[in-house]
Image (cartoon, rainbow, N blue to C red; front, side):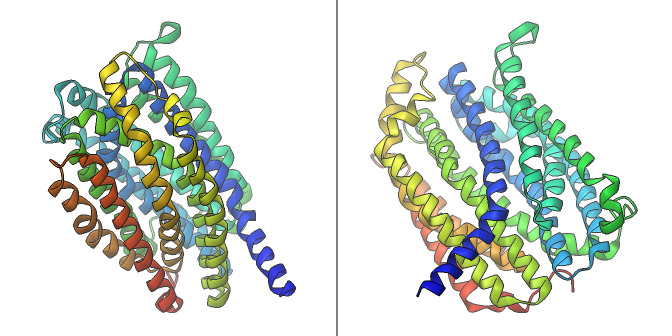
Length: 457
């Protein structure tokens, strides 16, 4: 029994060795997002409501691009595990080309933003803020995708401490640019909600340039061919789309469903309050989700490396260890959502519209109760889906994202939109979806089909 305990502790340490820098890096990203929301909440509660709606819309193309680019992590991990080091640099370059091309395509969405947000039926004040924020945020797509690629290189190698530095650059820059551009400090124009979008773009640009300087350093050329591997490789580019695109589709499809979910909430009676409350709940939820995401990413790296080594049993052990560590963290944070929701609410307080704020203040604590329950199951979603993707089972993951959210979350929310307490029923439906999905991914992982998969051939 003691021997098993020591083995378990050893596996936890292995996961945490890779995960803790990712946890901190994701926390930096979450802090960047939270600061955005806090600044916008100080600017106006309507701006906060607009921000949550925009992120739902923007996240669909951004997730497709970012997570397709980030799948380079699996290529790097499997090539590293198989000791085919000279293929790592060329794989990174294919991801960079996808990042640049996709980032430029996102800019083509800007002329359509009035039409997109006109469809949502939100109040006119919120709609105008949504358009401003979305247009500014589109400029962040290209640098964000490049950050995903450069981070994927180091994550796949297990050198995750570098990710902290890349994300720290973005965090510091975002805080500064938010202050300057939202409120117009020190002679800068007061751009309000648009300033938050431009601040994100500028901060991510600095992170991207810093990440590229680290990846393309001459010391990485000798082992990984990161300078000489710049040519387009049709075989690797095809595999980038074959495996990376379904991985990106998972995030995009779930983002699309969540966008529909927030649009319906915004069109409920007292929709502005429901939207702002949901924005606060989601922002607070990220305090639990993003660090847990770092642990899931670490598990995925280990799965990829072990698949490259053709050691499936070690991959299984690493995945369960990642889930155990995640549950410990999630449980502790979830308790605070139930015990002290007022602390979290105080971050976003704005009494310029007292009636709206009073409604938000009454709604958020109940939403956080939902969050405290379903994040335990969302931990299973993250760990098992990342493990499957680390092996190359990306098509199944994207198929789940296509089929489950709409019948379990979106359609019930639409059906109940006129009910008394509709926002609570909506979050109940979201909880049902997340819990159901967690068991689907668990069943797929336990079935073991992924053990015969590989993205590198």
